[in-house]
Every structure is written in structure tokens, then in C-alpha cells.
Image (cartoon, rainbow, N blue to C red; front, side):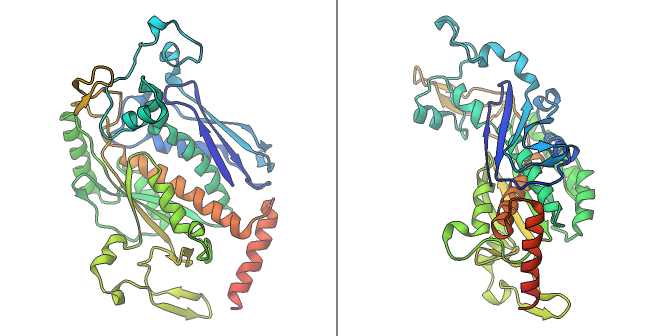
Length: 387
């Protein structure tokens, strides 16, 4: 299973095509668009989210509410396009108009300069329009489709914000359904009301200063069977695929599983998870410090992943940059942006991880229809039970 996305942040629409999705899966359009609406929320978002009302249109691969096995085409229209038609149109323009809204002062921390050098683009808008996090709209849409497949097999996905700036939340182990309920009611997606107030104050202070804030988000996936992924080749390890997916989200700079980097401080006896066995539950772990993975394969415990998002690159009090035409020192160009997108980034992270887990699920139990997948899963679970 794979997907491709296309479109620019101020273009007419964003598009994704999913290939390899099984047939006969009930696709709930409200659930799909719910994920897109979640991505638009969160304290610290900019004015763009007041303009866009992201709703996906399905242009192929679904009939009468069920997938057909054909490629699934998803489209999200950019409402802001009407303000950018002269700047982002595909038609050739007169040379005198080429400079309209041209970007020639790259922003530190963004793809502007590197992309301009790589693709020989003298207008950096041709880089920033695609490298913008607006592209994650379609990654959420594709993940929303994948998590509906996971839901068919009782697999649940949840997320929470652990840190924004210097405000950190002590991690609480809650039932997944309760975690979802609490975080959905929080503007910064945290379970701690005191920390929530401090985070909001920190975001307000950063906005007042023309600055931005990053943070840490955590994703939990429950109900995943043992054995997704593989140890036999480096590129088949599921935790490796998840790490790559998380780090490919705009502004993400780090990822960890379970206790993560804390393992460097501990002795091995306080890192590894002891193995238990009961006739009722089979093989389990006493703890889950590994975050649901050993040897690149799922253990059957919860998958626990944390990602670090740096502060957004666009600053309203911009840093020093250089004009690519004159080579003179200037402050960087300013594009409309957020002060803090950590809560929204958590939603994106949920969905890109859901995609990777669903893909691994199909690799293990794959079939062309959901009925075939159910049969394959049942046979495997029986094998595990009799082990």
C-alpha cells in the first residue's frame, strides 16, 4: 500500500492517491473529515485555519460507502486559492509580473534556500509552496483512511501533547478511550488542566514577542497484534518505518519509543521488559519500556511513540538572512504562519503512524478484500495461541 500527494499551500487544491487499499472496507466520510478538522484546531494556530474548512472529496475507489480495491483519490480544496490566483496560476505571465509576491530572502530553518539551490529556483515561493506543512492535510487524510482499516480490527489510535516550550506534562497512563476524551476537550491536547493554562500563557507570550514554540507529542496505538514488521532486513523493521514517517513531518527533529533516550541513563535490568505467560493472555511483558517493539517487530503491547517538533521557522520578528539576488544582509521574508502548531502536529503524527501500522498489518495479513484479511488474521492468532 502506498500513496502520493500533490498540490501547493496556495494552489487550487491538494490531492492524494492511495494504491493497494483492500476492497469492502466501510469508509465513513464523517470520520475521515473529523481527522482533518482536528488538524485545524489547537491553540496557537494562525489566521489561515480561519479561512480553510478542510473537507475531503473522494474522487475514486469508493462506491456506496465501501472501497472497491481501486486507487482511492482524495481532494481537499484550498479556499484561500481565490486570493492567490494571479500569483499561483499555471498560465505563463508577462515578465513584468513574474516578481509578484516573489520570495528572495530565505527564512532560516525552512526549506527555502536549500530547495532554491537544489532546483535552481530564483523565486523561493516555488519551494515554500510545496514544503509548507499545508501538505500534511493530505497525510492526515490518507492516515484517516488507514485508521478506519485498523478500527475494523479493534486497533485504536490516540495522542497527547507532553510538552510545549518549557512547560512539561507528567505522563499519565490512562485508558485510550479516556485519553481521547480528555485531550479532545483541551485546546492544547493535554490531560493536565494546570499545565494547559501554563502552555496557553507561554504561547501568548511567544506571539507577543513575534516568536514561536515547539514541543513534544506522544502517540499510543492499542490492540496491535504481535509480529508486525520484521527483523530479517533493516528496511522491514516497523519501528524504523514509523521513525522515518514521524521525522518526515515538517519541523519534526527527533523520535523515541517507550522510555526512549532515558534508556541511556539506566542499567539494562531497568530497561528491558520481563516476559510473562498465562493461559488466558498468552505471552505478555511485565512492563512496556520498549514502547511495543523488539527487533523491529510489534510485541503485542501498546505502541508508544514520541516526536519532537521544533519551533516554526517563520518568525514575525525575523532572523538575519541574505538576499539571494544582491547577496546583501536582510531580515528573512515573513509568510503567514502559526505561533505554535504542536497540538495540530500531534494529530498529524497520529495519522502518519496509523498509515505505517496499517501498511505493516496488510504486509502481514494482506489480501485483496477485508474478508481475506480477516481469515488470515484469524489463522495467525490461532497459531500464536497454540505456540
